[in-house]
Image (tube, rainbow, N blue to C red):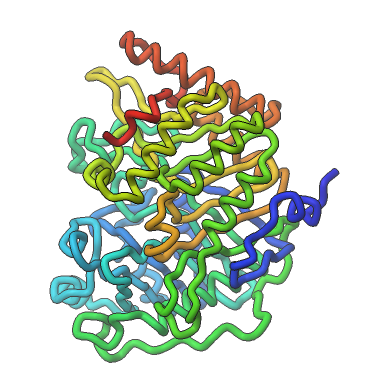
Length: 461
């Protein structure tokens, strides 16, 4: 039986990562927002010392499961119990500055918080025209009860979807077939030594937040406090499980004094994992346009590795609009080239409704390789997520956890149980289902599961 050391040798961690792989963790993937936000909210509701949150995209009226109310209700509830609540919001610049799903540091955000008599602290952090894209929650940092949630799920109405991806309720303001109304996404619950690295990342960003000294760049203005650095070697819970895990990031050089050279370890890790693949690579990602990753996938296909990727069938329109950009154009060409391989399948999940087929919007940023290694985080497979946006992933080496995570994703997409299948058998079966579903969709028939094969050359056109 392979050990964690064997797995690390087979799929090496990135040399450019600041934080090392740490043993003794408990890792639990949380697939789809309804279950993920239920667990996250429950942790916040039982916090005893602190709550720290990195927010990228936020709809102020999005409500958490089980009648818990909005994000602000959840934070207010924790603060009212004397919990030290810190929220780090992305301050968008450029085209996203006025987007309805961002909460920029402006006079209007100050008025909203003031109108609620908000007693917790907030800061805003910008990265030029790029995105502060990390989505992380940290509860009771530095205590024996500490827990982190790392992933890609935004705090939006569509992101609260459950595993069945039921038709969105029009009473909640959803329009029929609206692009972001039914989102498939993933977060990850983390306990153990690796949580100390999530803590260190938050302290770095909080203390170095770009807008903290500017008008509307903090709440309460000029009265937020810096955080102390985590104690050397601090890992509140100690070893609580058997999984080896590592926090990996994309951070531009010069953005934070505490990380002058930046970090680009997520990209390194994807390439390392794909290059080491022997049986299969399973990917779910909102944007699959990184040329270097796609070339690595082509080389894996040449070795006989199966490659299955799930993407949104109705992707964000900015992708098609950016086709003229040299980096994006190269990615489109590399993706189209994969269509020549029988071992490759590009899939977009959808559901048959009475009125037609509804696309399920894939916002997940995950990968599993050979039932050995997996990653969950905020990083899209596009060059701007590697060299522009600020991102965070948790990668883990654990055959049992990786296999269960693969089965959870494949089973949802394929509508069958793959628990007793090995990884390559499960992925091969999912490819068959996706291709048959494509035929069925063309014929107006019901589908098995959600996966529906699409032409990689025509994606995001």
